[in-house]
Image (cartoon, rainbow over all chains, first blue to last red; front, side, top):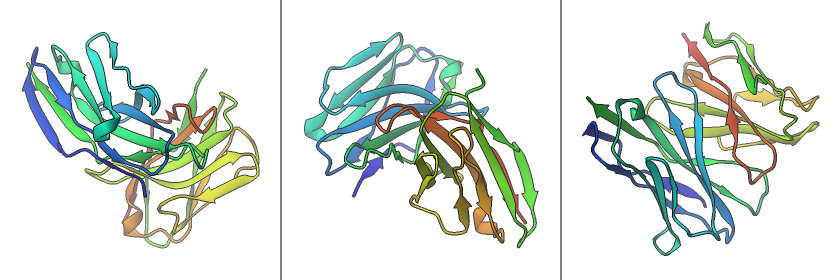
Length: 116
Length: 112
């Protein structure tokens, strides 16, 4: 069975603080993909990153960075110097390659509130 | 390039009514999906399609039906609406099974 757990339901920080959103996953697939999506208050889902299970290099994109650790089945997301515009619900998701259907298993989401 | 377009954006249904949620994409993606998002929860897969003429059930298919007669369109049919179907529905598409999915704006459905 596949499962994604985002244990942090809500996080509140003050602007300019760094914040890390945790994601732990379970899968029996040896090849899989991990994703992060952002859902701002307007409701749409915005793709942030896709990571192949064979690529454990950390990735940085501006103020965003992702730490993939296969040994602990985690794919954590860090926002550096948070801004009010980062306030949103963030979802971690998993897709196993064995079925090749692209079906996403989502975590429950972490609501991030960045206060000015 | 419109991406994934869903209509309507909002709808209120009475118990027992039926309706179709429309979804169309202009990216020539083979893979399409329907998810529902309940308050405080992640998205759950209702149905998916890997190409025109091919559909399959996801995690929560009961009470829904889909069809995929063209690459562009993937409508979701609700028969005999129930309060448990009150949710936000998202349609998505992807080029392949291992690429990122692009989502529509969502349809907020309330069944009363």
